[in-house]
Length: 334
Image (cartoon, rainbow, N blue to C red):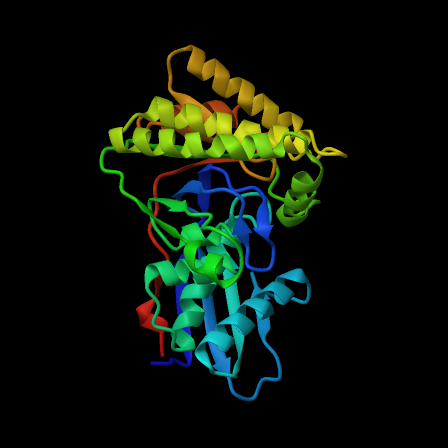
């Protein structure tokens, strides 16, 4: 059944095995599988309201009416929802990110996962989690993973076109014994000068290291899943760190280079290496931005957070743990 309005909440996810590069930009089909942890911090809350009198979709993001690329992406996404549902009304989207937007902290993943859940409700799409994941992917690739809580693997799928579209979605990774936390060290909360989409496209097109990194991802996924299953934090951290640094190496080898890491990012790397040399299990991962995330045990998380807060250039550090799946807020659905 359709609703006039629905509100959904979704959380960002941080990829432990990264997604970097598309084989189909329109359908957002990746070149490799990826695996992530959804966080319990920085949720996005999105309300979608149908308006029979509207002449176009409207987006209000963090209280400001959007007129830029964010509006274009939201309209394109709702066009896809309307095509699937057969319902023609335009909608107003009101979305609020509790964390920084477009700063390499997965705000788009949370945003499009929330939009997929809310829009499906108001347009009458009775979708399974896998179908919601495929839909969310059409807005932002990593949003496919934020549909799920805890850990999720996004399958790259096979081939091209509609068949590949059906095979590229995320699904939960069962983890029963994992004691893990993630410290988010923010060195720059501002919007990135170069979008992930543009950086990704340039890296794939020009980096001589790119396809070697893609070839390594399959082994990383296999080793990561085994480590998660056995609660092996050291291996989880080591694989995540090497995968992230490998991704950034492909960017640095692009022509010209793409560099998201700052001097403050590297100082956090050095501090985490120092902590590890003392016997504390701590490992870095970093997405398309300068902000560093540190994997560690729950018991060590406050120690790690205090250490990285003391690093020159770190603005703040927040401790996160595995978070929930995207969901409707039934109290405001009508």
